[in-house]
Length: 523
Image (cartoon, rainbow, N blue to C red; front, side, top):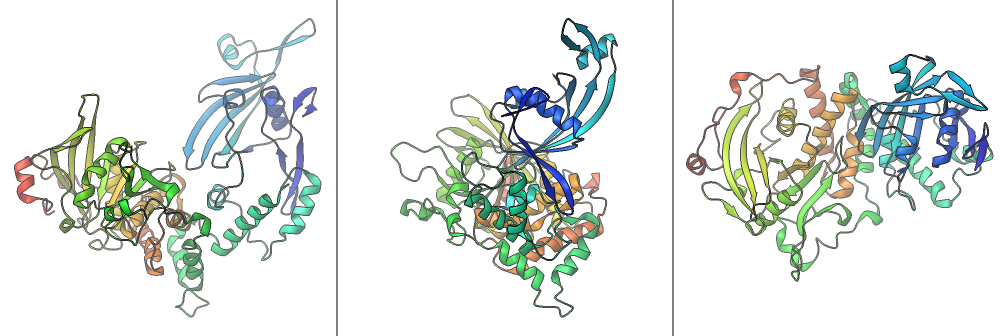
């Protein structure tokens, strides 16, 4: 711990960047006594962007004011202006104000707090600056991250196109001379190599909204010779590469769980599988063939699962109940069976499921239609209830044209809204169709907020959690084609829906639903 202007502060070092000296200031996370000196350091050095690596572990209340609140650090006032939580990071904007000295009391300097200044008008700010603060929350407290993908996604705006070579060792030698605590272990240095190798192998994967078609053409070109698509192959091979340390499927391979899967092509990884509350004394009661997948907003934004066989229907609804799922997207064909209640409720030990209503809808282009079924889950003990809406898009995306595949995705997002509960996606095997649906939903949200999308990063993250979902490069390239075609027809990013197409069978009775089964109403 050093001192800055007679205040304790962690040691800070200037580190050079690419073609720019003193591009970075590197320091450790502050303690409670060093917060004001660190804010002063940022103010006096003209810092406009701060990157925090890791969780502050109870220090947020000392270092970062809450949204709309103000904290005073001696003669600096810091106000939380905006805050947005994304997968693996939190993006905040703060307004830092320099306050004038109000008066001297003996040897003590008094400053006007931000709220008091607004109320009494006894002082004014000497200056104001907006500061963006990016906090990367996925860095573990011990050891290194399992994969560089999340960190690369966090730093995706770093450009490595100025030179065709990376002098990692020479730069490390130079930087370590400026900051002795930078990359002090072999594991940290190896992780840096993994990050750069991932970035160089995949190339630029963040695609701007107005450059989607051009990016797809470049991805499929190979020096003007057409197929094989070398750039696409590199991306696909990198996206489907799986390290040995990621391959743990112990629960899925247990004999008591083998009969709970429709096939062996897709088995979830142990660290990303969805767990159920086990029944004491019964093996395998915590198992369901489902995986957590990240989205744009949440690390557990989607649950990908198979169409439940008759023996696992109760486990399916137990998963819905325990994880508070309010929206289910069902992509599997009707011949897989009906797993929801019709005229008669479904009784489970913890809850009862009842059919409520059903409606049909379609897109403004009339190319995509869907059925929304509503159910009510009541606790068997009367302790709570849950409303679940099941959106049926049978045979998606086979029966959807390439430019309308996103219409079904957006329809489900409109039903789900901005809820923080997971979106449950069901296809026949819990494989390619469901993973494509989740990825296109993530791309849609990213386009709405950033005007760009990243297929590669999420495709690789999904493959690490459920290996085998991308069986061919054709399936991988379909994701780019679907987004590009949708943007070409709806470049403004908004899907306008006709009011005449809404709720064509909203008043169907349980008897009618039983008679029509999963067919619904043709739109």
